[in-house]
Structure formats: structure tokens, C-alpha cells
Length: 259
View 1 (tube, rainbow, N blue to C red):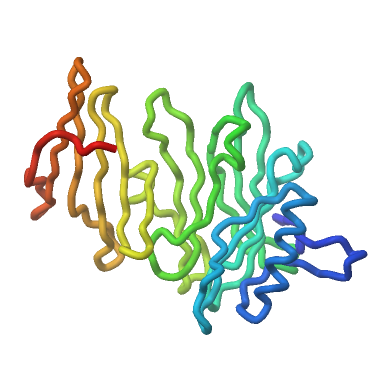
View 2 (spheres, rainbow, N blue to C red; view 1 turned 180 degrees about the vertical axis):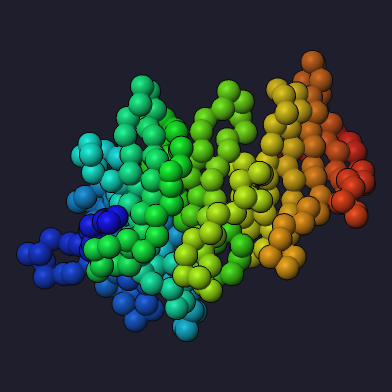
């Protein structure tokens, strides 16, 4: 039986607060007070707090314990409200030190208040430096469906393009599902307002760029690319491309804009 600890995040009982992380709009002030107390007293890290949500919207949030606050042999814990109709969950990242890195080899997920996990992801092989909190684990909406998804660093390569492992929350199955198409892109950035996915890359010290994608019928479709090349004397040329029928067509080229 796979087990993770329930209701990990709570404020000092002397304060009379049961501060298990909630996502409901009606508990907003209470939650924020508890989170700030926890962050100050227990070394926890809060993320993705939407202070400006309109009435009726669901706030998606998560909070993670730091590695410094986690004794050896105890999992790294995160607690999250991932979206409307989905359970509030606790995520346990099982880790160990290996040489100069942290290895996370299994993720267990349970509903808050329950002892037994309902999903185990693993074995995985996530390796990162100890100063990269939770091996870069984070929860964010990666397919713009209103639910938090998960990702974590896979390993640290010799080059700058860091590969990640991604899982999308499936409301239909009530599970996180591996997103291989995002794994292939490596590191990605997400613009929820414009519903765009950006995949920055670097092929050498003199050539780098960023590819742009949109979702169509649940799949990523590339829409463009911006590429920069540097000469030995430091001159930079930027070239823009548009994706047409699976082919990148050059649309503009000139000096790189000043940053």
C-alpha cells in the first residue's frame, strides 16, 4: 500500500486555526492568512495565488515544503487546489541525495484528509542540484483548461536546454496523465492570457531562439519561430518564421532589437 501523510500543512494549534490549503473563494482571507503564517514559520513556499479572481471563479493554488525543512527519509510535500470539481490534493515527492544531486524517483498523490494515495507516478528519474528547490517541481495550467498540471526537471544536461517531465490533469479520469509532447519540447513557458506555449532553445553559444505553439484539438501546433545568430564581433541578426503546413517560412530578418 502506498501511503502519504494527510493534512500536512496546518498552523499552530494554539492559534485555533486548521489551515489545510483550500481553494474555495469563500475561504480566501482565511487561506491567505494561514499561508503567510506557514511561509514565515515552517519554510513553506506558496505559488500561483490569484488575488484578483472574479466572483464565481475557482482559485488554483499550491504550496510546497522546502528541502531545508524536510528531514532525510521524509518526502517533500506539496498541497494544492487544482481546479473546479477536482479534489484538493497532497503530493509527496520521494527523494534521496546522490553524489552532488537530488534524485526524486517517485510521486504519490492523495486527496487531502486521506491516508492512502490514489495515484503513484514512477519510477521516475528526476535529478537536479540541491539548490533547485524540489527539482524544479511546479504546478501550473499547461493546457489552459483551468486545472493545474505538474512538471519536474528530468536532468541537468551539459547544455542550456533543460528537459522536463510533464503531467496534465485529466478531469475525465481524475488522474495526472503523462504529456509526452511537452516532454519533447524540454523547458516551456506558458501564456495563459494569450493561450500560447513558448519553447526557448539554444543550439550553440552563437545561435538561440524560441518556438511558439498553440493548442488545437488538444494537440500542440507550432505557429512560428524567432531565431538569433551572433557573429564573432558580437553583431546579432534576428530572423522570424511562420509555420505553414508544417514548414517554417521566413517572414523577416534584420538586426536584433535592443534589449
